[in-house]
Length: 297
Image (tube, rainbow, N blue to C red; front, top):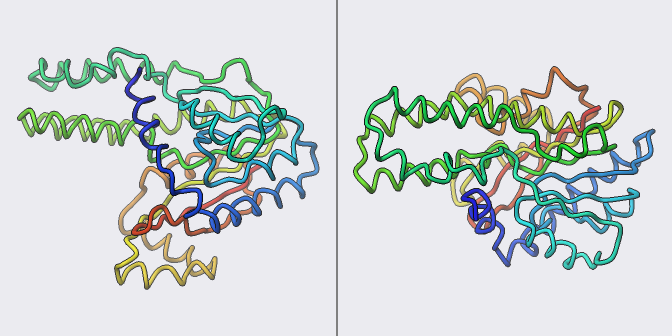
């Protein structure tokens, strides 16, 4: 099994999320249904990317709005569970086991730690990491579905593309007493590299979309601990789009883009925004994500 597939299977194994996310799921699904109902074009083929267990989207309601629903994720068992949860077995649904970077079965990535501990200088590390970059740049997922979908929904994925797994690798290297200056170099390389990973992902998504298709992207922008004063101060801003927008712009000026921000920024010159909405995603009992949902033509 590839490292990326294993990582995502672990991520999808929570049994309590479906109940915890009920209000968020209903709010997000209603927003998407509204955009479908207002769409002048018929939605024949609809794709959800990084669908997982679909604890955050009510696919039974979305399924009613399309001729055929496609669910994509690297974790095929999570997709099967989603179909069962929403009682959609034998309905017109296709499950697509998909990895989004091209690295899941790539030995360069899967043997990252084993290889890295044999490298002891920046030049050799760069040569190794450049091979990963070349693989990602050349990869197109779901290549049999180019220019095929009327609507694509992208679940929160920008903050998950490679970087979380890299942090796990770095923890292992640190525990093996790998030189800290080389660890810092690897971190720096990937922070510079991640915009390219996200850009390539977006490019691949757009290749799957019909020329007059619609794209809805959900991106996690902020993470707050619920027992903090900051959360208490910021959460009321969700009631006002203008207030939330102002806080967001001030934050960007002070701290710059994160991965979730960049994913949306990278799309802004390629598509036209129809509408957007801020929502609170109660990710766990102790943590909330503030997500931005944008619908594009």
